[in-house]
Length: 303
Length: 277
Image (cartoon, rainbow over all chains, first blue to last red):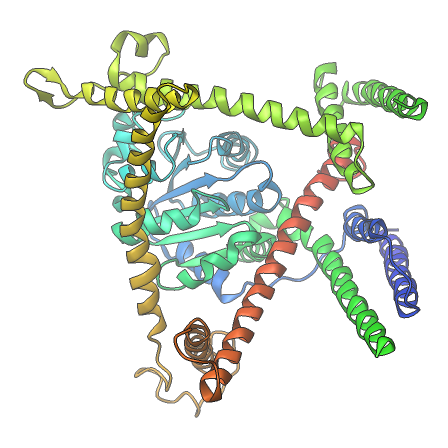
C-alpha cells in the first residue's frame, strides 16, 4: 500500500513537472502558486507514504561521532541547546542523538542553553529521550540541567573561567557546588568536550570564538542548515565535527544505530525527514532546469 | 467588508469548532485527556494554516495570525527579560530579602570596598539601564548616548579579541596547508585511493583551499586593474565565490524544507493523527 502511494505520488509530481516543462517551452507563464503546490506535494507525499534512504556518515560527521566514541567513560561533556521552536525540526534530532550517544557511552553530561526558548526544548529531550531511555541514570549524578541564563556572549565570557558564578544552581534550584558532577568542574576548560547545538546568535560560532579557542576545549557542533556553511572553515582545527542540517542529523542517527544496535528501534526523525528533503530538492532542481531552458529558448527567439 | 469575507470567516470558525470537538472526542481515550489540550492542538493547526494562506494571497486570517504572533512574541520576551535578567541575574546578587521572595539563591559578594559589599557595583548597570530608557524623553534623551557608547565599546572590544584570534589568526593558519603531501604521507601517489578520507582527496582538498583563498583575495584586490593573468585569477575568484553562494543557497533550501516538513508533520500527525508525529 505504501509503495503504491509512493508510486502514485511520484507519477503525480513528475507528470506535473513534465506538464510544466511543456508549458514553459511553449513560452507560457507558470503561476507561482503552482510551484507552491508542487513543493507541498513533494514534501507531503513522503510523509504520508514514507520513503527512506540509506545514509552513510561523511568524514565531518564521523569525526564527531568518533570523538564521543573514543572519550573514556565518565568524561565530562557539556551540551548547549541554543535554538528555538523554528529550528526544532532540524536541530532537535541532532540534540537527541548526541545526548543519547553521550549517555550511552557513560559520559557525564551537563545540559544548558543560551536561548530562553531552548529551555523548553531541552526539557523535551530530558522527558522524551533521557528519562524513558536511560531510567537507571540519576539526575545530578550522571547528568544535570543548569537551564538558561540571560547574557548571550557575556555568559560564555564568564563560564570560560568560572562556571558556577554564572550558574549557581541547577534547574531544580540545587546549588551546583553541592552536586557530584561539579566537584571537579570549575570552568569550561574542565570539560572534555563541548557540543553546541543551534543555529543563531549566540550559537555554535560563539562557542568556538568565546570558549573553544580561548580555553582550548574540543567543540563539536550541530547546526541548522542555514548557518552550516559559516562553520565549515573551522573544521577540523577549531571544531572536531559538524552536523549540518537534517542531513547531518540523519547521518549521525545512522552511525549511532550501527554502533549501538539498541538505538536501531528508536524513532529517527532526521532519517525520516530525508525522504521529503530528497523529493523536494529534486523538484526544485527540476524547476531550475525548466526555468533555464525556458529562458534560453525565449532569448534565442528574441534574437 | 464584503459579504464573501463574512462567509469565509464564518466557515473558518465553524471548521475550527468542528475540529476542536472532533479532536476532543478522539483525545479522550488517546494521547491527551482533556478539551483544553484539544483546543491548543487545533489552534496551533489553524494558525499554521492561516500563515500558509498567505501563499495564496494576503488575507484577514493571515493578518490575524501575524499580528497575534508579533503581539505574543513582544509580551513573551518582555516577561522573559524580567524573569531572566532582573530576577535571574540582578536580584540574587544585590538583595537578600528579595532573592528569598523570588526563591532565588542569594549570591553574596566575596569582596568589599572600604567595608561596603562589592555587590554594590551591580547598581551601575541598573543606572545605565535607566539612562537608556531616557531615550523616551525629549529633554533628557541625550543621557541614553552614554550607555549606548558603553554597549558599543564593550561589544567591540570583546569581539575584536575573539574574532582576531578565531576568525583571522586561526583561519590564516588553517590556510597554510601542505600542497605536495605531508611528511607522513610520502606515498600519496603510490597508494592511489579516491576514498574521501584518503591522502589523495586530502591533497586535492588542500589545493582547492589554496586556489580558492588566493583567487578570492585577488578578486577583492582593487588597487590593480583586473587584466591579464591578474584578471584571469580574479575570474577564478568569482567562480569560487559563486560556488560558495550556491552551496549556501543549497543549505538554506534544506533548512527551509525542514521547517515545512516540521509543520506538515504537525498537521498530519498531532492534528489529523494520520501519521506518526
